[in-house]
Length: 414
Image (cartoon, rainbow, N blue to C red; front, top):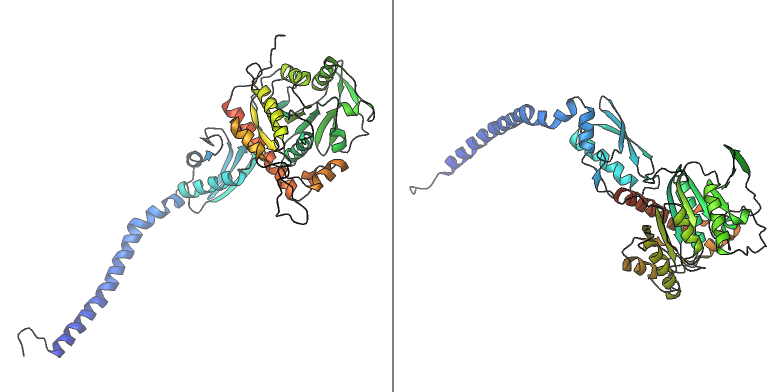
């Protein structure tokens, strides 16, 4: 037998004793690992769960959650209220900038994640979401209870501006906002038809010795229009100053009460009515409605430019592209770009303003307007489109209020 050779029996002996040693060492290692875990790891892992939860700890955690649009944390923005703590149950209220906030679920989930990661892993978190619509309007004698005034213009007639305004008003109301609508198209009022209140007449009350018109309320929206005051088949043949006087009366002599949003449905063009509005009220922002074709876009550009003029300086919240494409009811996936494609989007990009969204050209929108039940009240593709635009508008109003100075009434020297 060679010097380096090991007998088979010796090899077996070594293998046998090795297995015994390892069988003893493994339980020993496991024992040490278990003790190490109990002594060092477990207390660190469950320290947050066993320690008393404090309001300060909750606020510190929520201070890491950003409001996606305003780019600041919820605590700095004073959006956290009513913190309650009972054992491992944590409750608080998040005050959104609008009930139509499109990021509601994102903010809620971010808050829950922050609490579980930074305060207590086993916490039961109850988040109550409410809204307090922001406003930076300066307090004054006109419309003191109205938080935001939104002008809706187009520059050109026939692009569906009144349809968009009506559906936008109802979508904001359905989200929980208080909404009013002034039909400022004195010569072609269509709001009474679109809200199925053509035969209604507003009542007049006296308050502090002054006569006030009570707006008609339909679908939760406060409405006023020259269509309520003049026979429907009679033309309103007035000069500019008389039309402007009617608009002023709708603003100053109506009991609007408290509103989150007051929408002004403007007539086509850039004329007396538009100037009267910006001279009478500090307008929060303007929405431009257009269709995709060039003949509409050239006038939409003029309307947008009017609000952006140095003397006027009304922030443009964005552009809505109406009749963006045709979708047949029997083929809802098909899109036919009858009036061109992306004209409204390109207009928004050219002027560095937000693109608020697009509305398809479908028969049901026309039918809804004619029947006085706007399309957003249904449950279909068009209702969803109007809902998304309403959320985006509310979002843009909140961003505008957080980052810009209050709008002032315009002084125009003639």
